[in-house]
Length: 278
Image 1 (cartoon, rainbow, N blue to C red):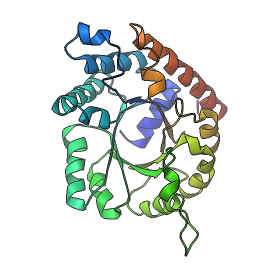
Image 2: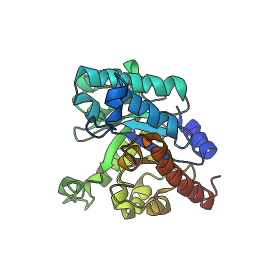
Image 3: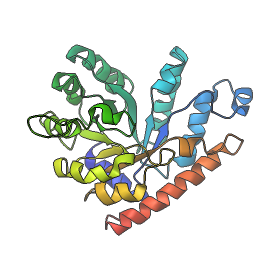
């Protein structure tokens, strides 16, 4: 999916919501274990069916699937295949946070783009250009670089200033990485809990899409994210995971997820209209 197609989906659905499929086997409704032999996939499927018209992207967090071994990988593949065949307009992100020496990154890229048909993968840029560029060799695929994350440990490294330039590390990542890719194949992770920093970020990457976690359960403000981060193609994918997928642990979990996703979508519709984008 290219940038224009993503923007068209945002305008058509009046939403820039990404639903995080952080599916924890210990948190899904207990009745699913009695009713089906594939409870995690059935949970994902129900969440997807309940929210697909309200969002433009899904983001499975691989840790939740890898933690249960081979079965988890098979569930992940079935989930991606289900989205791809049933809702082909969805943008699918592998939240994998990979990044290693070049030949290893090439294998990761083959995994997510060649074999599993994701649209994008999150990549840690710490090892530099040769750890990122193998992901950029696939047409119509995206690298989403970690730039400024929403966890408290972000302050350990990401805000450290260069003694020579005074530039903070996350700003160096934003600036240097533009030599590797462009706004047609590279996005950045920017945490919603640091929304005020989006003004500085937009000075460096005015045209790139930003993947913004931290809205909802982590306390980030959607209004502030839009105020500081929205550009003339929206330029935002705002992720919400726990607030939506765990809205209920009872039989109504899918409807409860839809209710929460609808609240977010309606707020996004207002913000898009306010910006003159719909």
